[in-house]
Length: 502
Figure 1 (spheres, helix red, strand yellow):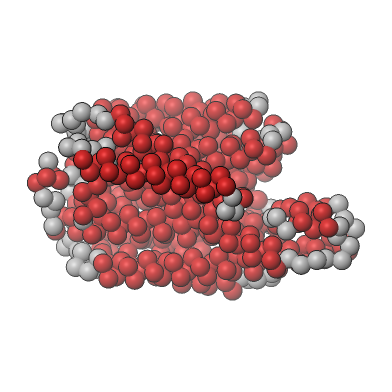
Figure 2: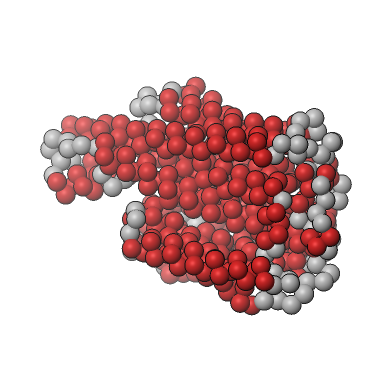
């Protein structure tokens, strides 16, 4: 029950990319409107997570979950049947609002539903499998739906699950809240949202424009507002976000691992679908099916992690998982213009199993370190790290890869200067230019563009592999001795002091 919402939320993060060409042809959005259609969901999701996690602690996590399910279901219906770009932007905004209420509520409720540490660790692993697997399943589901239905179907699949949640949550889930929440600080809520939104906007914009004035302005404004937010939290007796949680090394390492692992994974997911469809010429459905090893291994790794943690220190499972992912990312640099299927499958299996194992346990560490009454706020920290990792992975690694692509795509005989400039923007742009050229010139351009794209993808995979290796070393060094015999985490072995435990 609690895994279903995060499965859909993570699918929504990646499924829309396959629907963009069809909805563009139907709704005719401007380039600015198209960017908002794609990005408004993650903007609001990231900006509201901390506030919604705190709100769930106050009014009840089940109540917030039910309200979020209603909003998410209604927004899915509006998005599916949108008749204009503005209508779809509004629906995506409501989806972001609903998603921000669902994510921290589901993870926080796991703590009250599963008080036994061993059971909770398995439950968190299933939750993490749904989240990580959903991101990889998005392209598969999108490819299948777009070959059999209209673009709105990628949103319509959400509605039945939300109805199930609306009916089942009040019957199956206990209510859970902070019995002594203290006064609500409205200024902290405003600062948290106002700080996160420009940062995410800057990171997303950087993927398209590079280091432009809006990007630098967003980074500066967001950084300044979050600095003010942090200073205020330190002074408040009842902060919106309890920064004292970061005193615990296991908590801090777990949050950093989530952020950096998702950063590396989203860099891969930005390039891999384009590689499969535009370089290897696969249809959306076939490309999605070739990503099944990645999705399946992610689920398998998440479910295996609790079993491994019964006999191994957390540092070996988390560090070993990220090291496995680093190996898979490095193996991906062997992919070339021929698209060796064995390399493709092995790469997906290594990355998926490693990321799944690591994230299953980092979420358990984060949830268990926090006192029960602050579970929603702690969960929101974990998911905010996911969102920042996602945004930075697409922006930073996407920009790096596309810069290498543009640098490697030289002049092609017979391609006018204006078309050549458009072809250097993206691989999709090169395909559009090639469609209007004579066959021989088009074939030459596509071959050059494909090789340039592969070069950019190799650089991204190498950077991501080095980053994942660094995360593995961090876990192995800083989580030394973090082990809960049979179940618990470092937090179980070293309980929070009274000021944190309440």
